[in-house]
Length: 624
Image: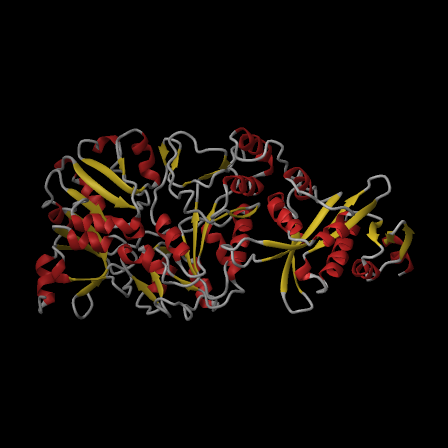
């Protein structure tokens, strides 16, 4: 360590052209990431392009402000993208630039081991502090490792670069040359979420518990969740990157990091992208701890955060759960980045959740992004074994540990309605599902979801039955004692096959409605269990509906049947149904008591041991 760092700094201070003139032909140059790009150094490098030959430029998350991928630089520079920016897509497609697919957590290891040698590192740093340390500010990520392994390091000293805390510092003695440049840092403004992104954000927020630690990838859809977290408490953050949206959550008291199991009281990140407001906010702010990706993206480090929730974008997901995130067919579009690191880290976390998000279609609505199979050339980033939650604007599918049949049905269920029939047909042809499998013809009515507490103080979730509930309905029926089966169906059942169960699950939510009482949904690793179902089937001629109930014996006498009846009456009235009819064995006194509590006039007729009941909604309403 050089004690008189000021003198050393003066000796190393030079202009950009002099600093870059020391770079040899054929060198491998790393350029700092995203908004931390050294703007003067990059511009000068291009101006001097004619002096170089076969220089490899290694870049992670280039914002697309440079043009060294254009034809005039073909003999001088070869771009190697670790994550593809907008300016590099065309060059990579045409074969004029390279893409290296790799987990972000492994890039530093490759640099350190020499598998990705770095001759020169061009970085942006803050002004030195009183001890001679400069901060990498908003771009620590893999930049710090590159600067540590490079033979020659040129630092663009920018007074606008914030001094971020954590493992973000280099000493003047570790840098080969300094170039000063007082210019505003590059800014990144996140696009406002559209209606689809907002719908997805609401669904994601439902999956995030209080005291969770969150990670969001880059993009308007992962970041669309922020406005819907306002009622959460004590959230933490462990993420590779973040944008301005995080500030509002901190200032509103939603993000406190107090309950984090790893680095409590700290937002842990490796870089950030945003506006001047964000850069001023992180400057010398002890709430933020910036560390290299080698640490932040290590799945074993991520997993030490209890309730770790990762939120990342996909381009397409096939019916078996394979996720493509970096390419559109043979065309490379973005990169792997830290997605898999956080998918695996959150999956290993205690009570963690891994969430993949995507709109159901392309922006023009012409192509489904839930697909029968990945197109030729598409790469699998998140495997069938890694995937957990998938969210579109049409719902949530938890597919981890599920069979191909279950996965296909769940994913079709959250696909855009315009494409569900063709996805269903493809799944049939591919042998993923039953040949006679049906789906509801209308959208799942999420507005009928409700929680309720029974007589024993247990919270139960009530929701409309889904086509994917077929197996759960079979489990309910097979779990009934023989006497209960006879009471419900008026005869003994030897089997409750797919052909019987499927029509009970694939309902239309209008003339056929069924509400399930569900437990176990809070723990996705344990299979959801249906403990009761109430259903009605409407007669279009009379506008009366036949109603029936099934309740597991362990959940009887808890008020569930009474709740289901009243809830179905409410729904039926919204559908302009006049009343309910039912057939009840005279020996089934508990069910008769349930009907007597409907709140509406009821007539009964006893015929050969069976009560024929009739409840008229309109009559009571008129009397009221």
